[in-house]
Length: 249
Image (tube, rainbow, N blue to C red; front, side, top):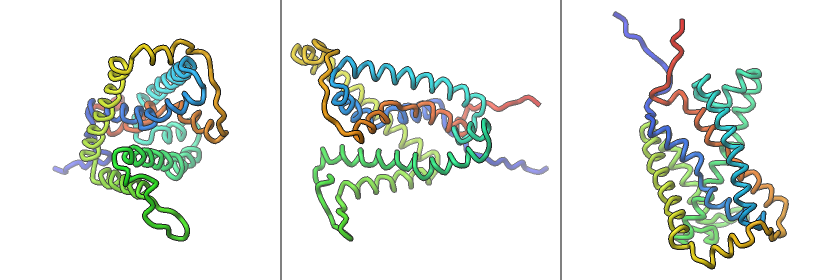
């Protein structure tokens, strides 16, 4: 009797792990930064809420579309697979390399910088103002070293295997979600005084425009729309332990 050998990804992600990946991907560090930037850009609380509502609807439409695609093609790769099947392998190939060299690497770098920025609030010595050395005229700060080390550490954890990676993902997502709910509760029960309510909602549609550069405005617009819910949902199809296979002959 010969033993059958199967190849492919390990299906070790349960419902809780998959949910944590989606939540952790959607609620990134940007949610703690972008709101303040958009508020300074639009100049009113009403327009700020309207921007979030519109982008939320757009994101939901994208999530439903990607959900259908993920159900049709539950394979690792996500958009790479969809572009390859919809157009041709060349389009998928170009997108895959663009994701690897520019899109995903840029996102990882931005999150690492945000992590070092927030860490410096608690530990000022790890901030970007603490210059450690300046090789070839380039200032290397403690914040940059911390960001690089965080990327290296998380990369090592992911290389170790799916079990270790999902454990870290679950812990970080739970901590991030609790922090977000904590901020909401603090705002509702402690920060909701008469002066704050009057300042934010008495003239909520009266915009007070600020002079900003094009680069700053463009960064806000890029960050305000985030379809990563659907993006990560479709990319982890082959890792989900309860994924269904087509049983038709």
